[in-house]
Length: 223
Image 1 (cartoon, rainbow, N blue to C red):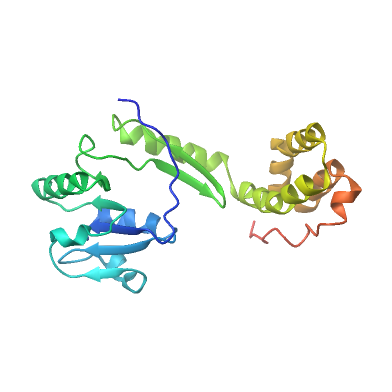
Image 2: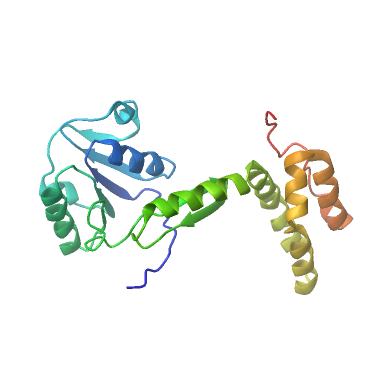
């Protein structure tokens, strides 16, 4: 069955993780980048999860049905398939989004491999057919899309609203945005920051430039 890709805003949403092992640790690491209210239930934890206990609501016990109360999303990652299946079924009965790590058929969503560079998010999925291939593709993307993409989008977060506000002609706006979305400019930002900024400034009208201070927006990175 064809899956529908979607990016969820989990801000202030109640998210439940059942399990405290390595798989749960990986899921938690990604969830901690959101503003979700995370509850984790498990009799024991890995050291990496224990180190994050102050950032979550941790309950040192086995799962009970009331753990699902008011949950928006649940990730089930125990080492017992029969337990995972039962919790997954309970979640589905309550119309809660559920990812059961060892049972994609029962899950209502899966978690793709990803590469994140600031606001740039690239995801890869193989429909569960070969996760190892997804991992390989993620590694290729990670090497191709460096931190310069994060820097570029930081600049665009400043530039785009000003362009939209100052330039009424839609075609002119499109032309500016198309010229800015150039790999050569992005790569130049990664190698020679000032030259990259100079190329961006060539594209922007003076009426836009005088509203901006772009030089201090990019992080200094070690080469």
